[in-house]
Length: 179
Image (cartoon, rainbow, N blue to C red; front, side, top):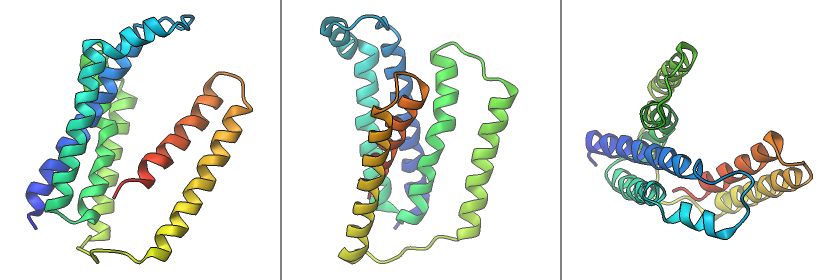
């Protein structure tokens, strides 16, 4: 295993996914909030920014697969957390927003925290295939958490709490399907 190269590909995956998020957000900003017609949403999803975002998602998947084929999961997977700082940096450039000092401090703390966590954990390669029992338990727990969050979100009116419930459910679903 080439851990140096796997780290490069993991960072490329995080940056590519961050770029995808920013480009899709940019494309979504072109759709009026009050517009419920499929036509304008279809235009959004076929625009260059949206398609660029989808290409970023595909690129992230490829980079992640390469990173995981070259390095240990315990080293590669935590680096995907850097997607958030990358998204803030790229978003500032693409969307024309300046990051505040507080935001920069948050980026620094995320990166430093990840470094400390990786150093403290001293990850090493583990077993190639876990047994079925733990996977089933994780699947049941994740499914229950997703169902609870979606159910709670559906009972809320449109707005922040509802969006947070759906976002948290999506995040659990996304992370529970990752290798």
